[in-house]
Amino acid sequence: MRIALVARLFFRKAYRHLVNELGKRGHFIEVLCEMSSDFKDFYPQENINFHFFRGSGRGLGSRLAFNLFVTSTLKNLMSKHPLELVLIEQEGASGTLPRLYNLAPMVTYVTQCLPIFPLGKWERASFIKLVKSNLYTGAEASQLFFSDMILFESKSALDVFHPILQRIEKIRSRTYLIPQGVPTKLYKPMTQSNVEYIDVQDKRPLILAVPGTLSVWKGVVELLHTVPIIVERFPDSLFIIVGRTPPIVDKIVIEAVDNLIRSKYASHLKFLSNVPLSDLIKLYGAADLFVHASYFESSANVVLEAMASAKPAVITQTGLYKELSELSFGGTVTPVGNSFLLSKAIINMLSLDEQSKLNMGNINRQIVEQHFSVESWADRLEKVFQVLI
Image (tube, rainbow, N blue to C red; front, side, top):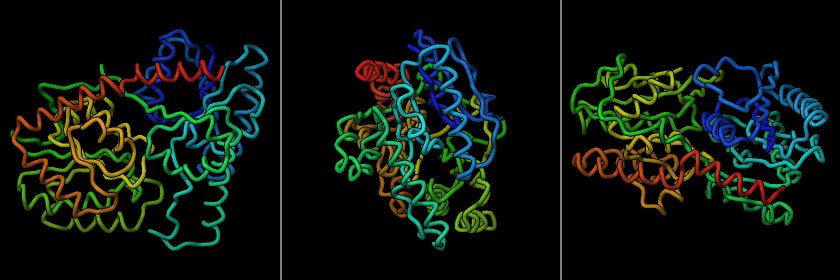
């Protein structure tokens, strides 16, 4: 099968693992994405060909330019070798589908949800922000309408789009729930994990969070608010937060970070950015507990990565929390945006005896192996692709 994957940013590790898995199975993947320096941890394997868009920026103009690039590239590919389908990662590719209509069967993977953008929650609403929010929301909705098939990563993401699906029969009848997966051979339990640049003493509780970016969306503020509470209860505890600083940092995040850095709790917190994949795997192995405090995630693969590494987890009610709760995963689910309940859940988990935490980690590993491996993800995709074709 010849598949075109349109993933403008292509920064999600999940899609990189997916194309390698599909390529290994004999499918040929044409990847259309922006040229990026963030490819150092990606090693493409067989049957993968890249088409790079060399634009820059993250605004509306950049999106439109990328859409033109996608249209022309796919037309060129179709003239040489017929494509059996086009798989589009929704994030970063909004508004592409109407221009691609009738070129090939098109599948949209919903990986974000702009209709719930909480305008005015953390910053003053403005006319420009309102217009841009409505433009992006309209682009997301039109992309779904013109899709031949729509895939959602989780039940929680599907619930957010339910009002749209309810109103449009064409969309509702072509919707599938296909959770993503992670490579269990890469993320696995480690008997010993040494991270050179982190001073982790024996029996020192290590709490790991991988928000990716230090933003309010990722629940970084709530996570930072738990640090003093946890340290008072566990004086030797250490928080490791892995995430980049976004181009525009939210004021509330800056204030929360500054307050901690100037406090007596500063030595209990480390921020890491641009962590190589090999070191991230070691961090999962060294952690006693994984915490994900995000406001919204369609999937949150870092949770699956930690679970595959046999770690108990505290997560918020987003992403795959419904699926994981139904599978009785080793961890706790807390409400979104509630630092008090988040800190309480972390304390309860750290207070468990070592054997209980080990058992919870082993349960998480088994859940990922059985339900959320990259192989099972590819299996599900192959089945729904055959339905479409």
